[in-house]
Length: 279
Length: 307
Image (tube, rainbow over all chains, first blue to last red; front, side, top):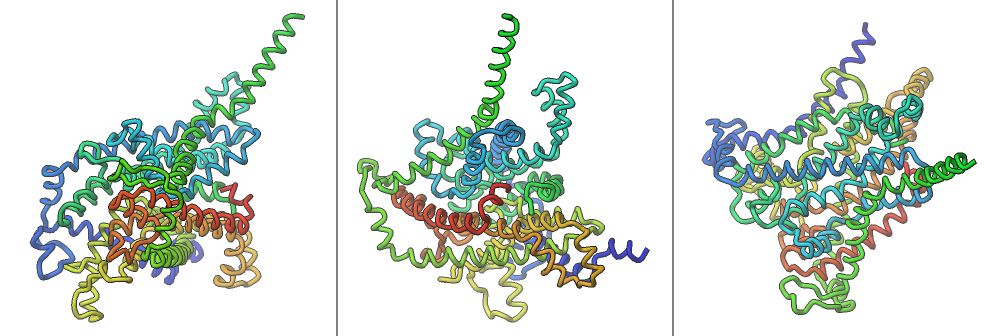
């Protein structure tokens, strides 16, 4: 019993460390949330309050009614979901090849994918801007979808190939002996087993697209195609920042990723420790 | 006779198809990577040797080394290179130390661990834009939380415009960046810690080694390859990152909080001088290439291939 207790309860020093990290993480989120619930008067009032004196949802109401925020929100969803799905499709094909075949040039291809991770965004912005201009794709959601898809493929493909490697080959062979074709085997047996990994990869790609700022700023100008960060940013650049509405917009934009992230963070750690990163 | 021939040729074409399969499966990914990573690099190098100002479209053309000569004369550049070094070392160093502490604290089962983990890892999923705005608001001169707390503690007598202090305004941005990046290290190091076999610690327990001694003598050496790799990759990522600076200070006052990439973005955004921006981008690529060569020496490449 005492040893079992010891396992359940963190020691005092561990408890203090955990508490400090919790407070440090929560403080900025808390401050944004509290600000979003305050009136303009209270935010700029002489006395700073840690909880709104007159709690109000006005900032949320204005964000939704008096601005293009709902449009930004819809755009962000369209862009992030489409590019997430495209990333998955390409990564599953390529990841399977890297995990299950031996072929000439495999090492070079792996190295190429890894090398992409160091290419600075700042080097890509102008050339891609010029190309999209030539194809008349500037100021469209298509340009953003294609860009985010491309940016996330290398990392996601390597991750997915790691998940394929963890599914025993014997399982695939057994299904094929039972008369399943290769494609049917992968679709009906292997992919369902990998589902947590596939979901985690999708969330990764989704979040990256949801959060991008610079490509959006560079490629889009009209309100109709701005994503959440880009729209809020252009607002900030033009007008004095209204911190109440900004915070409300921030809280709203955080909700989808926070929900997704809460579900998948376990898979990330488990996935990484099982093999993606070998010690 | 002919039946067996048919079978043989069918087998042969199937064999050929089978050999082509991995390449066909990788084709979409390869095309996209070439179009979106290789092409921009080639194009950026070309642009670096051109006079290319968006607002001056009639004078676009090759200009030799002019962009690089202009960079050498740029009075901002020494300051920005120094900032970049400080930015990378301070950010990655502190993110690593704090992330390690968090991972050690999490490397044991306790009640509510899942919920706890979901909260402390959350900053990782937040957009840089939002992180920048939250911290900008907290460091605000007028009614900012940090100023309020420091006033209460008596450490300052009047509110400070932290984000407008010449030469120091990069520090609040680094603080925000640390907050943003601790979860990444926490996740990576926790994953590595969980790969350490329990038997090793049990054996060390029997031998009477204390917790601290076990950490330095067993755990750290065991996960060292992961630690080194994570650190080195993170340096590249932080070196390339400009969003928080752009959002919190805009590089100001007077470019004193710019790092290399945020300076490139200001060249793109404000002066629309794509030639000079590309020359700076090429400079970044040169730094990254040199760094990577050292990186591959240190990690001996094979380990990098496994990540």
